[in-house]
Image (cartoon, rainbow over all chains, first blue to last red; front, side, top):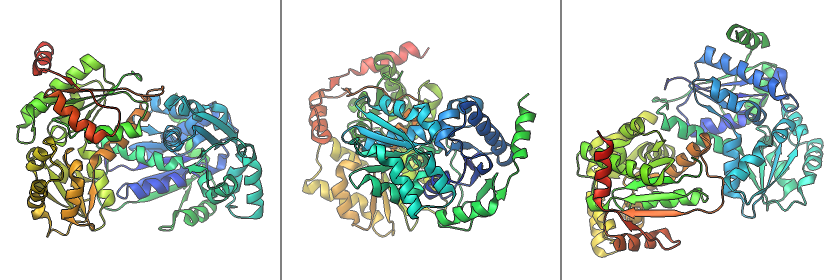
Length: 277
Length: 277
């Protein structure tokens, strides 16, 4: 089990921001990443649908890669499916919301925390609930910013258009006196410079990916699941266009060129039908 | 269970260095600390004896304080008893060696790591094994420094005598080309300035307490065990002299005056006899 890879999944390429932190903290761990670009965005979908997709991906990663741990590197899928997956799978399953909420409570000084996320994550209310559960003095202001996912998937991170979209989406947060902003979608850290510019330097941006990578490390060590070897391998799947995925991944990961494999959706749905009886 | 305290134990007062990190990271958690000063040092004792003491303390903390998690804030007891306690107790049990080893592998650049610890911890070889298991390029040089425990328990942290003892004990590490030194006994961070002076600025000191507090946070969040309230309480027991304990604790914790309760050893040993049939 120690030699098995860690699996990470996302609706698209945003989860690569979490993968990057995991790879940096755990340089001897093999990883396998699946971006479900053929079906993104997950944000506007129902809980039942996102849970079904997450289950399909988890089963594929267990069947094909024998993963020892699953990281749901997607806030929408964490909100919808983490509890279900923790019950259904026989491996540890880590989401991004609990670590992100924890990081926010450790950063804030005035106990006013903003959360930007997809429609689905905001609707789930999980960031607010989790942040309050850690310290009920906090006030949480959540804003759905679905457009930012579209920008990132189009690799539109710096244009005037991108700046305009970010400014418009974040406008409701500007008069809320928040000192901390959770980037509650794994796509958003790619837009960090634009987000910081709009929010101003007095607001600390929290990337739940960093805290999630710390949790992954703690859990691996707690269960003695860390890989006792040198070096690592990384495997990438996308249900979308592999060339597009590679372009984005190579741009962001700053390391060995990524060569993603295209995974037809039928590979995921077949798995479900076979196992779901 | 969420409202229950986190239990921490040590052979003496060294574990307070871990408690301090836990309190800082988790300001809404109640804690209960037990220092077994009547029977310190644990370092030269047998594995069987340290395991017996650890079991007695764990049972007391479960019975009297209903702790939701046990932190073995003592490297000797972690080396001797962590695995046994994880099997025997129905709550999560966290030791300090795995987090400390992880932190060291993340800090080192030349893969040469020193470990200073008690005789018992060095004899267990667990730091070396755990560090190698995380990255087998590492070389670990371990040195037993039992005298440093005595200095700390006597609150002798800055005298010429203390400087002399630290210099003598660390001498074997000076020509080993290490760039990282694990303070593998929870007493040692209290001597950090002296240790740093002897080792020189090019050596990074690792305090496993920091990494342990991070693991505690991750596990609380993973199992949804974090306490959803504001404020915290802290309870202190010592099997030794309460006034001495309070002196040391107040000197180090920099917060509300500590009022430890003296716990007669019979309270621990009786528990064992009752439950152990």
